[in-house]
Image 1: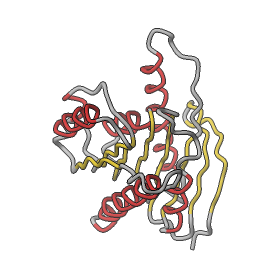
Image 2 (image 1 turned 30 degrees about the horizontal axis):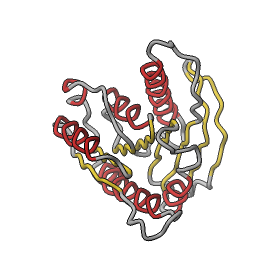
Image 3 (image 1 turned 180 degrees about the horizontal axis):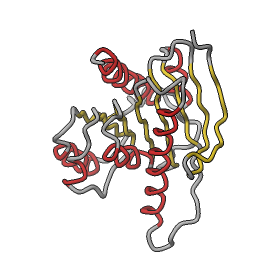
Length: 219
């Protein structure tokens, strides 16, 4: 029996810096790597409810500490996404090398600019069992999206109709994996409530439960 584990990770793994919080409940069934960059009002700490729900249902979480770094002023978003993608790839290799997590299925959750990063990392890591993105995604070619094999849930929160239409086009290009697009919109009946966060948490958990556990049953 593996006891609950909570560690602040700050290491150099295979020459790459890696920092974050790894939480493993007893009898963990999988690990979700979480990365976020602030975008459109979302802030660090917005994933607290999701992490608590995953933990309660025996999923470990590895929340990466991502702080924007100095980047090329001509292509700041490209640089940030590249760094986030590299961090996700490093974190995945780290978990697959760690004795307590090496045999567990892995999922990705990315919010804000992290949404693009988890999808791009999935093009390099077909072994990732499930991906959930929260936020608008741009800048992918049809060829890149064809490389995504992991079941992918794309969530949009209170977005504009044009953004939703663009995301429908992107989903149509994800030909090689199970995929689903969901628009999460609060009812407006409960101002300042956590209604959106609850819906995002439940949709995300159900996706990981379905796809990460199917990977366990098929091994």
